[in-house]
Image 1: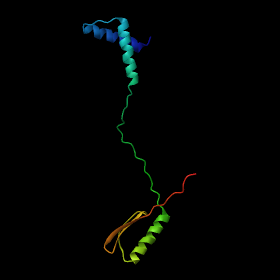
Image 2 (image 1 turned 90 degrees about the horizontal axis):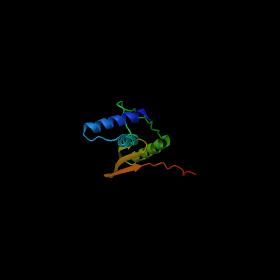
Image 3 (image 1 turned 60 degrees about the horizontal axis):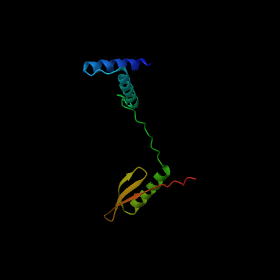
Length: 113
């Protein structure tokens, strides 16, 4: 028999006797087996104290979209629009005739085959 199980049986019998409720060897064995089985089912998750390094994702700059949006921005300025902001190579925000507009450029990928 397993040394761990024998040790646990002896401990259970001793504790029960101290509590004034002596148990037989068979009862103590059942209790010990149940306790060991319960411990196996419990997963022990430990968290590391070191903070994990986050993977640095390098953003890909789309040159084609950047050029298109720069041309749109130049056209808007030629029309007399007041360009407020540009967001990377995706968006141009501007005022034209006292109205606030945003042009967003989306590049659609070809469907997967």
